[in-house]
Length: 218
Image 1 (cartoon, rainbow, N blue to C red):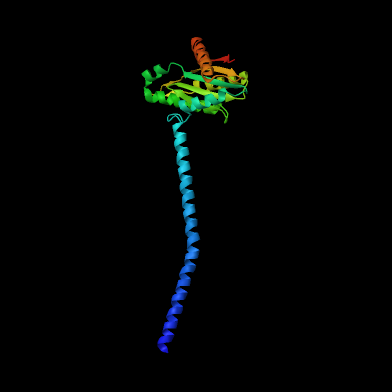
Image 2: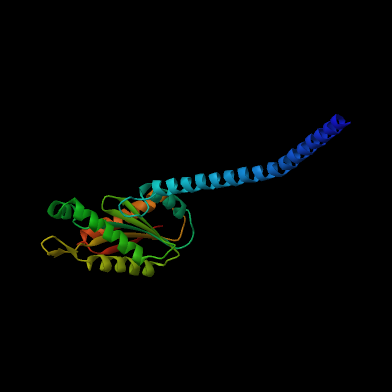
């Protein structure tokens, strides 16, 4: 009888142990799936953030933090097809080669960075600024009439020319910038719009530099 009772206890214990194991499995399985889901979500979010960072880096000029030429070309195409008043400003630092030759390329980089900073300080949050290449820059302004665009250009020229760069011997120098403006309120071809701004910049250089010239783009 004792042996039979022992067998009954063992069977009951094993049955209960199996039930406990099944209960644990029933609880653990959803929890495990929850952790897996959370892990996949976090991994996906990190991958998305990494892609966004890479995209931003691919469109950003490393020296100035402005949009680079590739980014400019993309936004120019979009802006060219619009129908609101808008302007393309094309900027070039005057006598920049002389700055590099006289004060060195490191000082030239400081000049480029200062113009970039001045541009950002003189435009609205929704406006777009780019380093086109070398000492050339571009700005896209939307919803602005010609007089307002000229005022923006004047603020940039005044702010940039008033900044003094200090050399090791405590001597200082300043730089100026010329600006060509192409204003339109009609859909235009991007390359023609850029060409008009470039022609306006050339005219500004011919007239003595440190000035802005506006041309209407039909």
